[in-house]
Image 1: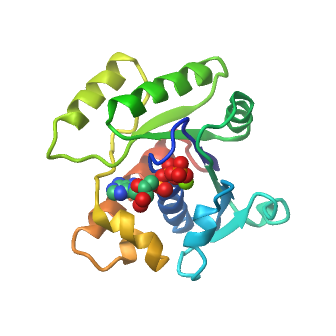
Image 2: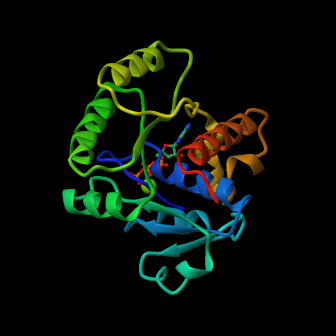
Length: 200
Ligand SMILES: Nc1ncnc2c1ncn2[C@@H]1O[C@H](COP(=O)(O)OP(=O)(O)OP(=O)(O)O)[C@@H](O)[C@H]1O
Ligand SMILES: [Mg+2]
C-alpha cells in the first residue's frame, strides 16, 4: 500500500507519524519511507541506522520502490494544491495529522476542502493530544460537525516523541515508561489503516 502524510501546516506531527507508521507496516512486510521534505527530517532521524525500515530521499526512491510492499511518504509543510492532487492520485490513503489547536483545525478543514474535489481517500489524525486539557474533546466535536473522516485513535502528547529523533529511534525503543503508550497508539492507527485498505 502507499500512504502519504500531509498537511497544510508545519509541526503537526507528519514526520513522527510517517516514521511510526512505517515501523508498524515493516512488522507486516518490507516498507520504504520516502522523505519528500527538503529538510530531510526522516533521513536525519534514520542516520544512525536504528530505524527498523529503509528511508530514501525522493530522488533516491524510484530505483528502490519495486523492492518494497509498503510505501510511506512524508511530505513538507504547505504543499502546493497540485502537489496535494498528485499525492491524492498516487496514494491509497492520505493521512492529515492535526493538533487539537484551533488554527491547525482550521487549516485541516481547508486541506479537506481541496481533497473533496479530488475524490481522495483521506483520514484526519489528531496528534499531540494533551488529555489534561479540554482541547481534544472540542477538537473531536469540531471535526465531527465538519464531517471530516478521522481515525478513532489519537496520538498523545509525549516527551518521548520529542526526544526519540535525537537518539535515532522510534518511541518503542525510547527508554521511558510512557513511551510504549505512544507506540501502541500508532499500532492502533496501523490496524485502522488495514481496515480501510484491506490487504490480500
Ligand atoms: N505526539 C507528540 N508528542 C509530543 N511531541 C510531538 C508529538 N508528535 C510530534 N512531536 C514533536 O513536535 C515537533 C513537530 O513534529 P514533526 O516533526 O513530526 O512534525 P512535522 O509536521 O513533520 O513538521 P514539519 O512541518 O516541520 O515537517 C517535533 O519536535 C516532534 O518531536
Ligand atoms: Mg516533517
